[in-house]
Length: 471
Image (cartoon, rainbow, N blue to C red; front, side, top):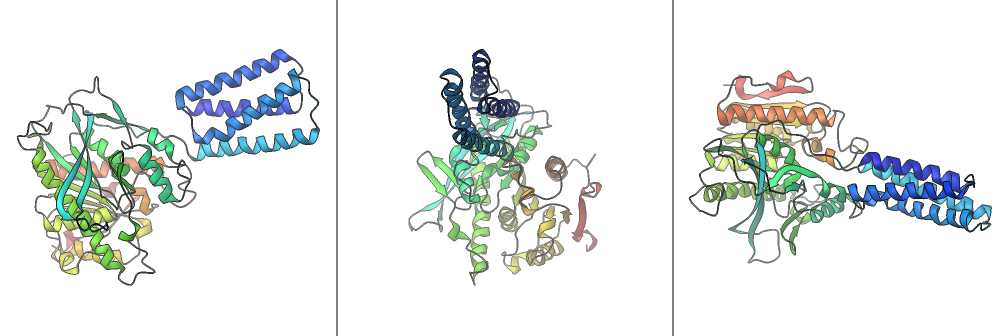
């Protein structure tokens, strides 16, 4: 709890000043102050657990108590220069702890607005595609899925963390950012709005489907905010861990597939970069197709599946960020089971021009960040929209970066300062995106055109292009 952490920081500062300056003259006052620090520390540990952000603070507290004991209780005459050195070091530790607390806080998941409770389950999908991102020629492709769905009840079921695979993913994410392994451990303790294995709701006979694809160096929970919002509104949402494109895909505790950087080497040092990009985007796209195949199995009469006949396979939407958006486009061009598509900075640069010029025959909405306003990706994106048969739009959200389409706001309060996030308020942007995404799928998967909110209604969104005016 942040209030306890702030209080602990404040009383530690006060204690450091009073003890090291020898202003405490009464032993009872010393023991009272000592007791208060201990009580607040214990409460903080009980409610928040042992947090790395406070390690240096605990060292400072121990130092203050030890020196206070020798100064006041044992009445040892400690040299001034030693006290000065201890005071300086302890002050540095306290300041650093304060910076860590405010820079890497434990955030709460965004609240959902729908009427449904939310259940969640995970599945491992294997198919016969050769795995091109390992050295073993006998390896076949495996991916992991997480499904969020409207729940009948959550009573007696466990509310799960945002990162269902926990510390393994947070450490891999920290490593990818170049942070110490523990730097994002607090993200593994964030509790989601979902309950593991809760029974599916019977309010509707079946539910439309939305499949989510993360970008390169992402992971399946990076768009849980969208997944939970849609599930609370009556959708079954499936997010894919694209193995070796995800920071970590946890199949079992001792079976983890980590990001393979060789899958997409540096553009600057790789002459055939677009060949690598094409393989990666098509791999993501084939993962989407394999996911739909697996959903057909889950929807069958198998007694093992709670989703039996609950999946409306005639209404499948896809949404993807960056490489995930490119993979969704690839899948939609190849698989007519997909009926609507949203791309968030969809990376379509590497898709073959023949496929791009064929265009999409399903409704599509492309949201672009201001950071991607320029770049070679736009050539293919414009060509795709212009060539599409069904209505297709491109909008830009001003004041945003490429990462603003993900849950980067959960990592640190410094995201805007270091340029990971744009000038738009993260909470406002999240609400805008959720509203636009919901309205698009509500219109194109449910046929609900009443009350549809156009992206044009938001000041932060600018219209860029549409084939509507070319038809």
